[in-house]
Image (cartoon, rainbow, N blue to C red; front, top):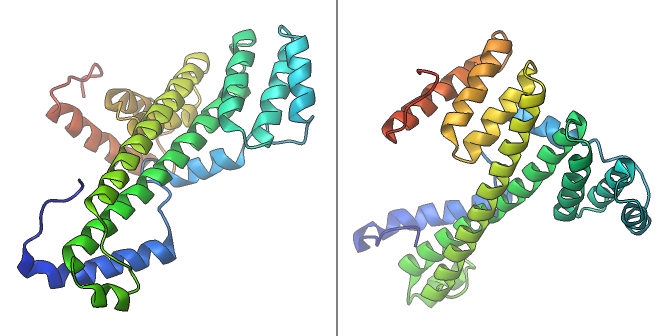
Length: 261
């Protein structure tokens, strides 16, 4: 469960909070995630190398299967899957292409974007499940047997413990998927920085994705390299503040920083 048991005398306070929470969730929707630097993430989603018009999935698949060592055929298949919205399948095809052309930085950026897409989708599902669990909890606490009150607010009957448990399990599943895909995204940015060691954006993305994956030391290393390469960038001050926070987290967790921070 997400919340401890409330005291009965505080119910009127949480009635107001629950109503505000429900209304804000309904009208404002789920947030877009708080694990990165917004402009760069938006740019990644808008800059997808495989987004051009191309062959159909079936024809591209047939060509790729007939020519397994043809890198162009494998890339065309990956792009067709991405254009069709089949993100997981596109990742698998793109990974196959990268086995043939390991140093294709454009394809690696594309792969990172696809992992980010899956992570963001899972993050939205996690937030929705968490919101559902919160509403379930407040409704059950506030209106338990008060059917007239729930009808007045348009919330229906009280949630059962089973429904709260289902929401909690959905959150755990989505959070695990989110974490795994952020880790894969970070791994891809690391591959890029190993190939190109002087691109500040690559290191910024390595820092962001590693932070989202809770790989804090790798995030610090990525951010600090970004600051070395682009000390006057518009995001530099924000990144410095993030690095400071991450170093505190690393210190509290008992880890040591190889960079001496």
